[in-house]
Image 1 (tube, rainbow, N blue to C red):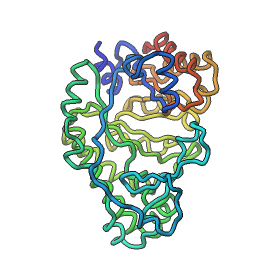
Image 2 (cartoon, rainbow, N blue to C red):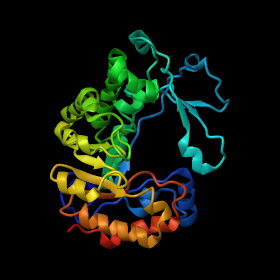
Image 3 (cartoon, rainbow, N blue to C red):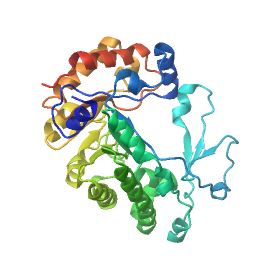
Image 4 (tube, rainbow, N blue to C red):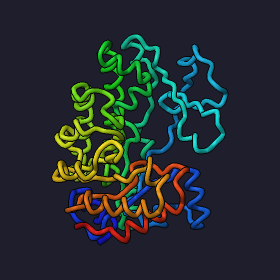
Length: 359
């Protein structure tokens, strides 16, 4: 079975010849990989079944300094194309680099006009996707599947722009501001989705963290009112462009109350089913008829702090339970942080090969 067929079969809840597996590395762990293997690309070295494509850098240059005139920012502050300020941690320890502080450009907005006047990015511009169709075709020609999409989505971009506290207040106290912001964001993201699917990706991915380890960040009622219809509209664009494209959804934390809603609006793959927040075997038992599951291996406990034997045991258990009947892609529940020992990365791969058959 070719890699592309293998992973697409798993994402469509089928049973390919073996359980696909993937993972991603933070830059410090990437350097360890290069030192240990002499290779440059973990996906090629370990034989992952899928590759990712992403849009080209923006040509748009926007000065966001006026949105921070009331603050004294460190000189090394960086601004992304959404105008979000990224402040590096004071520690020079590389293990803290993943945890930059973010400041929101629209935190002081008081009107819909303030939202409408904001210089939103041009993610959906045609030039951002130049050459992607050819890149996708080249990857498929190697027998591999292709994924592409959005690192963040409606909820995440909204609180990043407005500030978490203020955006949550808006949902209750200033709904006109919340709607204006989300609608502007969703308009851009629908264009991004369309372009990715037109380029030929097999899997369209969304990242949208709406859960903590204990419960959702907002009530399911609010999620259904504000987020669900906008997310549904993006899925509609994807499926109208190509009915066969697979809809892949990521949220950390406990999002169990909205899993039936995600199924209803067309989500087909759920990631990562964080084991500290939800029971992967239970989620498979309840929803495996409608959802494939991608992830489930702990990055908070087992991968960084467990022994290789612990990694082997968790991989074995996940394949036996979550992989039962098919529809499972084995992966850590997030990117592997610098604390993960190289021996545990190897244990993950070795165990995936040893136990990687569906029951």
